[in-house]
Length: 145
Image 1: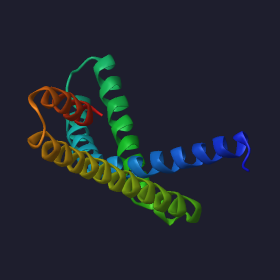
Image 2: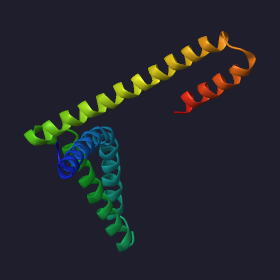
Image 3: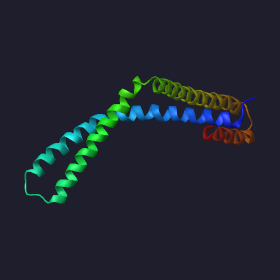
Image 4: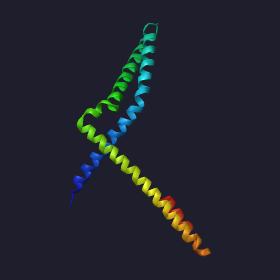
């Protein structure tokens, strides 16, 4: 039998794999936005640097540009390049498998609920008036679970 520590370590590993999996997907979605904003800030920075703007404004624009450049590079790395590292590749596969298993589980639960409600409906049609209230409560309980 597995020890509690082994189960905890396994849970942490699966959690990290899921975080990497979702981080990759989010980074791929955000990369075009970060890239576009970085270009806009670069254009604004060029305009501000060659005008008579306050020094604080110039510093703020330059810092903003470098922050967005960092976020763009980071999202590009997380979204695409990190897949080349073997251990991260395995973690992403585990994350995909866990995500797929969750989806299958949710579909099975939904199917079970629907089948249970059908059975309750069939029983309700053959029941007396007093029992119909009990079946309505049962259907409500199934739909809320």
